[in-house]
Length: 563
View 1 (spheres, rainbow, N blue to C red):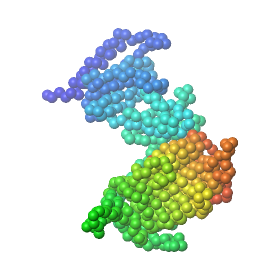
View 2: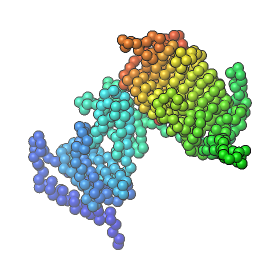
View 3: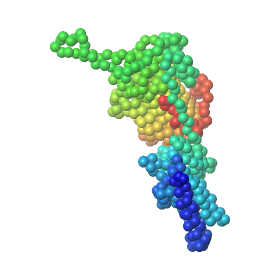
View 4: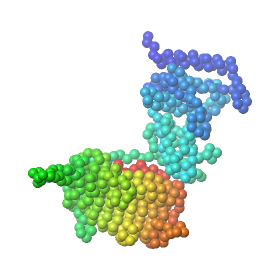
């Protein structure tokens, strides 16, 4: 008859428990801190996910209300070769955490145990599983400590309120924010790969936890024009009426429906240097630059309406600024399309859609005015929709909308790692045009040195954006710009400023003041609604504005950018 390893382990466990029972019967009382009190024994049998013994696993037991006051305060015990370990404890409720590292792969488990006065011993089996983590943003300027009750976890958020509690077993945890004497907590169910947004801004109410939503990548649309039609239905704000590759803009600014052609980008090459055949026989062999066949530039410079698709993911490095022509849809859905090198410029080119693109790794990195933006919408361009794109690392401005450009919507984009995010309008002494119009909605701004948005002249409607980490002002409405600001989430020191410059005594320079109307915005770190009516300005279109708060913030943070 064959004896399995589990049978042997169970026999050893019985012997082990017998010895424990003998000790308990012969000595039922023991002196403990605070008086003489009977202790009980918790015997644990720790298993790997496949049921085999977890030998030399680390196990720690703490009262379920325990809150750490610093990292690594309590020691671990270790299981024997059969995965067994025991603890002598007083009656009460306990949280047991077990951890094991095998071949550089960590696993763990958390287990709750309750012992009453009638218990003299308890035997339990713990099975280890995949570890998880909780990532969140505590929208409090004081950046309080974050702890997990019953576990030795002590985390101090960074200056922006961001924190990560890693190496957690899967399970339900009581996450507490702030001083243990002022309990401010919530129960979190943590599963592998979870990212949670923790809103601890209101100390008078319960901490809110929002589970992130995962956006499925859009399939490559190929030549299915219904996929293009579906895209057009998502346009909101001033860019409504933009048709991209499904229309043609006339000289009067009207866009008429017209079925365009499809141009598939088949190479990551851009401009190519070739030998000039007309000068091969000369003493000095010359070269000339041509546009690569099948390149992004070739598609973008075509006349007429063109739906530009990408055959493959990759970095499309622009060797010189790309002056895109009108009536184009640049569609990166289903691909990881990275525009690098020089940026893209519009020049009286209109009816444009930029979808699912990443603008990164610029060729010019010096902080000077000659640096190209990632995307420059200028010279009376109209009807431009920029959606689900990422802009990062350009030295001064990531996107600008200027010189009379209007009917522009920027939606669900990420603006990160630069000096400023968006420039709307130029210095008044350079160009004055109050006809500029811009809608900003569901955009994410992070790690910007100066500001998220600078508005000068024109009209701007900003709703449901998340300004998370900006050094100076989240939005600056100046130089007679009219700004209608509603339902945004701000987690920076100066959410909105209504002037651009100060005079010597520190008061605003009235020549640079703007007109602001604010309603239903949410302030995580500091700030309040500025009084004003935007000089009577209100958008002349209707949109559905989401309620501002933690749920909106995590949705924008996780869903903005390429999908």
